[in-house]
Figure (tube, rainbow, N blue to C red):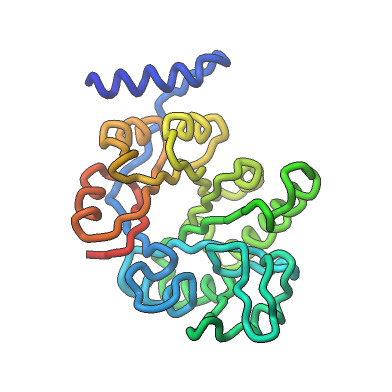
Length: 276
């Protein structure tokens, strides 16, 4: 009870500055679903590739992938905003690189490099694993994404990516099975403002109290939190989040012991390298 009281006090400190209170709106917790981190978890190959996705969907409850957008406004799987140099191509930012150039980058630094379209992943899921989940981690990086000093350019970029992602989720009937994850509230807000029931998760590295309040204020589904030994979340806090209507993803478990410990606190999703 003492832990719950402390958490409630923290939520009040953040929210009551504006006279807000967060009433109970409980969500049902079924069981923790394990998502293959970067598509394939322990897949013996490149992460965020079609091959990794196939492996992840065969072994886990779903997958987590990172996404970038090309100059043709196509959504590709990649954690990094930079595309590796290869052959005559010197590399550069995803959003300044065309689809044709991306396709031509097939071998870099002695290993095969495949860049996979999100469209192909969702088509595969719809046909083969319609019951499983996918978490889309939309990555935005300084140096490649529009400058924070050009608000209009930033908004156009977010809005274009939102249009591409939302259209695909509707096309493949994946709205209810997709978790949309980002550190950028302006991007997540675009999904909230539609008449579709998207599932938005604000990505939080450290301050899960503030992240939870942001999610409640903005009507997101929940938070995606980096849970490790130096910055862990408790089962009491997750119970409170569920009571207030929020869900939680945590990442990343690297071995079976970490995965077993993570399941004990009952998050809704775990992004994991292991599935046992």
